[in-house]
Amino acid sequence: MTISHIEHLGIAVKNLEESIRYYEDVLGLKCYAVEEVKDQRVKTAFFMVGQTKIELLESTDPEGPVGKFIEKKGEGIHHLAFAVDGVANSLAEVESKGIQLIDKAPRKGAEGLNIAFLHPKSTFGVLTEFCEKP
Ligand code: CMX
Image (cartoon, rainbow, N blue to C red; front, side, top):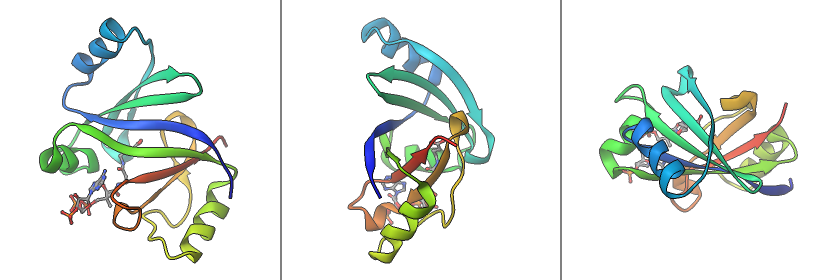
């Protein structure tokens, strides 16, 4: 597998509208899309920073992955997403090296990307995502 760049950083927030104002009014970035990802139980907002995105994540369900994360750890960096040259082959490669997968196969994420997550217990505490454009 080859990682070309950091595709995005996922940041868990309690309130999307308030946090968008910080990224726009204080940091001068531009929110270019807001999207609900129903099966992940989140609403997301995207900002481009060079070739990397910031993805703000507000939970739509306290029992969803971001809802549980905020309850346990509070707001902050939630996951790190790498752009890879093929999610399926990258999953197979890291699994063969003993890494625990959350997703055994690619699925659809925000912006129509093919995505999959690795478990933070086997990646030194960082929830890690692989992404590729379909
Ligand atoms: N980063 C690091 N550690 C995390 C974590 C995160 N984002 N989320 C949970 N954990 C840790 C918890 O702290 C906990 O650790 P301890 O056992 O030491 O207390 C452990 O993982 C289990 O946490 P949990 O609250 O019991 O949650 P679950 O096991 O039910 O789920 C996880 C954890 C990572 C498997 C689940 O959040 C998941 O499947 N995540 C992938 C999907 C996702 O995060 N989607 C949201 C983003 C979607 C998008 O980008 O579009």
